[in-house]
Amino acid sequence: MAARSNKQEEAAPAATVRTQEYGAGTGWDVGQAAPEDAYRALDAAGTGGPTGPVVHKHPGGYARQIVAKGGLVTEGVKHELDAAKAEAEQDGEA
Image (cartoon, rainbow, N blue to C red; front, side):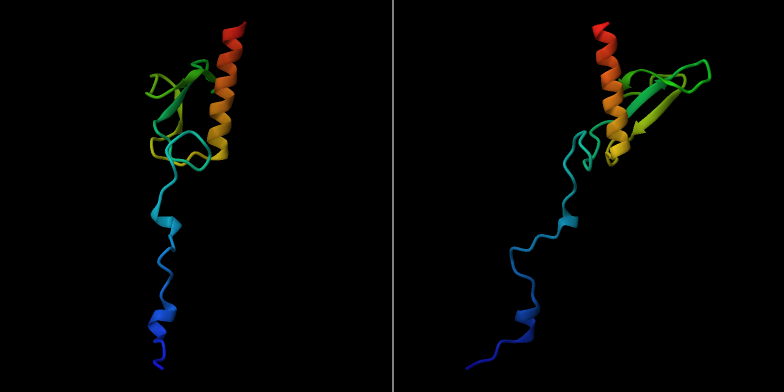
């Protein structure tokens, strides 16, 4: 009987997929790559408080970039996007 070579035993199975070869999906969920830049205007009074909706192009004046296109959407980014959305919905209902 022929003995198996060590090379065959050490080789990874054909169905093995290395996860680092595949990026996260594109979207606004945590762990995904942001599909667009996201900015939020800051008030001009100097308090630095966010004002207005999240926009995808720099709004001019004072603004904070929440995430860059292709950047990782983290818990903090998601929290800020959700907070801005809630504020916009609240303003629309009033």
